[in-house]
Image (cartoon, rainbow, N blue to C red):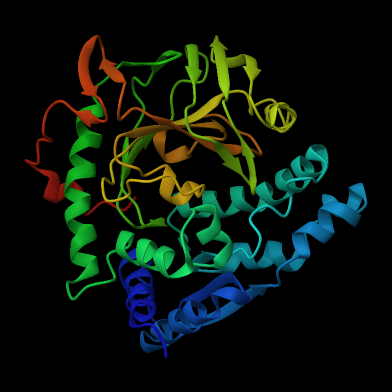
Length: 383
């Protein structure tokens, strides 16, 4: 029996998140495990007169590449892929791994090289998106592997994912995400007036300069589910220390107890209780990998648990996350890197954030309600 929530999710992604139009070339990326959502998304796109085509990647290919490829093969990108990323109008990423720990024992340097290669394609995609030439969105399809990571049964995890996307009831999911847009856009306007943020918590006293940078409210257009407000801090002015109290997960590998010290915008000291070699390998990926490319507030209070999946964890209401590596051009960020690694800082029990010396956040919540005046106008801006 088909799950009606999958059809509702496909309609939300194709209609609201991507606004797929007649005649548009629409690529749908996913593994064979995501076939129900791939089919549903293709059907929804066909109803709009678009031109969908699936790009199905078989499980296990990445592990084979990392283990067996020569250095030249690790850095190779097919000209067909280059052509596709330059031509598609809409792109849906469906994350659906069958083994989230497949690269745990792989050589960190080879993993780093493979990631840097794929990042070249991502940068082209991001540049085209910034110019308004294409749109993309990413979503999680429930699998046993991700359910295990979240310490849930598959049924529990399916309920968690579909509930977080608001496709599990009778209401209009798109209308829900339009209401989310009002709040996150209001927060973005308020934060856009700030020069400096100071984040304080156990083992953490970090100062970031955000003056002149653009804050963006995320409302289900590039991620589903969503609910955050982010920007790119100034590249040379991050100072202080931060101790992450949630594991940092990147490409299926987990690093615990990450502690970083910044001077002049760069990580000058790093340690981890588990996975320190992997942490250091990624920090040394390139010249931009030791610089913060993003800082963000997690504002989705319906996501209340750690699942070892950054798509959800970085949105947890009451947290902040900080990404090492590349920044998003639309924030005004200038950092370039093959890395973009989101690390989540839980501030729900202890934590304060000061904006230009004024307390604005305590124990996982802003101290004042958002000013929604004018939010309905800015909510129309795509993020």
